[in-house]
Length: 165
Image 1 (spheres, rainbow, N blue to C red):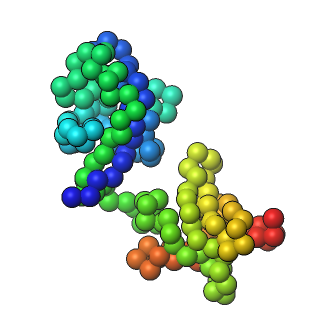
Image 2 (cartoon, helix red, strand yellow):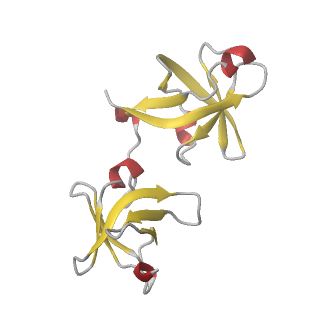
């Protein structure tokens, strides 16, 4: 079994054991299902109560008091990799993109995809260039020609001047 972190408990919410979770993705549907999650060393079921300022307030089975909820502050929530939902075409999990070799359309190396910044109008691919610089490439069709997760490669068409910054 391979576990994937999907969020982190930030604080207690209310008096009935609910917790506020910082989600690692914008997929709030994950929190609406009553699936098994791993909280610390325990398996629990949870259910979304409401969304508050980009966070999910959830109820966890067996957590019924504010004190029990406070004791979980800072604990990450994991799901089994087999419970990850199927993605639509041209959508990728960040964990699958990190480490991909990034080249331009002629095959010249741009660098290695080291992260994805998701809190912007569109995702930004963070690329570590061979010269030690970091390049931020908007993850849009105009600039990302193809992604081959199995082959760990991305072909990009960076905007003019981006690589010279």
